[in-house]
Amino acid sequence: MPTSSLTCEGFIRQAGATSIGLGMPSIPLAMVPGHIGTKSAEQLKRDVIEVTAQQVIDNLTVQPAVKGKSGEPGARDIVCKGTFAEINQYFIDNELSDGLPIVPPTREAVEAFLKFTDRDPNEVLGVILPDSRAATVWSVAVNGVMAGCRPEYMPVLVAAIEGMCDPKYGVEHSGNTPGGENLIIINGPIIKQLGFNYTQGALRDGFQANTSIGRFWRLYLRNIAGFLPHKTDKATFGNTWRVVLAENDDVLKDIGWPNTAEEMGFKAGDNTVTIARYTGGGSFSSVSGDTPETLLPYVADSVLKYHMWQLTFTTSHGMGMLRPLVVITPILAETIAKAGWSKADVKQYLFDHARLPAWEFERQLRVWNIRGVWDLKDDVRNGRIPKVFYESDDENRRVPIVWKPEDFMIAVSGDPLRNNMYVFAHNGFLGYPTGKKIDLPRGWDAKLAAVRKKA
Image (cartoon, rainbow, N blue to C red; front, top):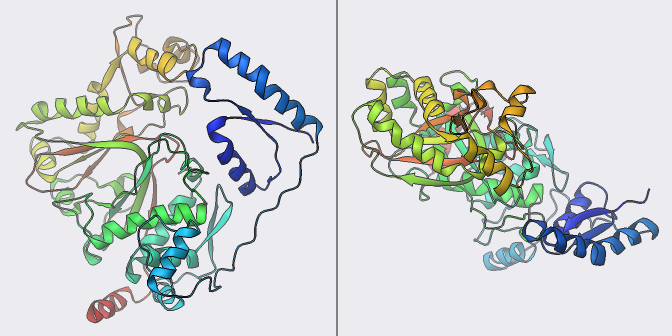
């Protein structure tokens, strides 16, 4: 059936690569020069008439040449032999490396990882876009070796990729232009068992578990999902891979607050990973005050400043899927809890105070996000968004940036004696928060003791 798919000039290579992964390698493309977001209506019309229209006609009238997808080696094939430097050069040349030296994934090294899972190496955890490649337990081990992980991290790696494969997470959006990057949050006794850092220097590299598992995620997106820069990964600026955030479960238990895992529906004490993508983040120092009333205004203001264009996930583009994340240090959480405030109370405060004037909210969508005519009043009356977005005709009324207080996520980690916080701007359904339980293999304690003895 004759077709023609239109795409802006900057996305031609991505469209071609994605079509192969979708099983339609010969799909005809028609290019719109430049980017429509920077053109006047007259210029856009002229470009479409002079350039795009003829390509559409050609696509609809000329049978495209049949293209095929190049074959790949088998999962256990030896693809390269040589010195450490030669192996690394091979991986760089074949776009299998993130630019840093990788640990050669020898059969022996991969088998060591597989000893830390009861899953069949050939088990398919899911099929991942854009390359529609099977995510297997074997490939998890291979990329774990490459990233510099230790074999005992394998249960965490498997759980993380189960999250990546969950449709709710939306891995297919990992190459979108805002350059969002995933964050893995870990909870449970496994934090101490594997030596994750959850105190001073949280989110800083330098700790093997936090660092290598964060790198593993990006390698897996590259090598299995198929997100390659200048091709299927269209991040305009991009973030690099993020170090794993381990929560301070001890402090959370002491103050009676649920940790992230519990809020994702898991039991206290479960080992879990929670994944979500964020377009950016920033550290805020000196959150000073001795009561919630003095501390939280700074928090609410900072959350608001980091979420602007992301409002598209609140209404027009995501319809209630914005989930801002605030990471606060233990001393802040303890100070707030000492006043009798629960985590739910903090979320309610943010819901009530991290707000914009209605006219500014609508301008953000209508003008800067190019969502056309946007009217909160009409959307409330038509039942598309909650009533809190239209409680009067006052254009200066303040409206929230999320649908409900529970949409805010609050984690506790970092230097126990510093009054700082970190705000992450969420990427909506393009990486929605998804939690998975970490399944430990039989004889976990003995296996862990054995590798520690060798170390």
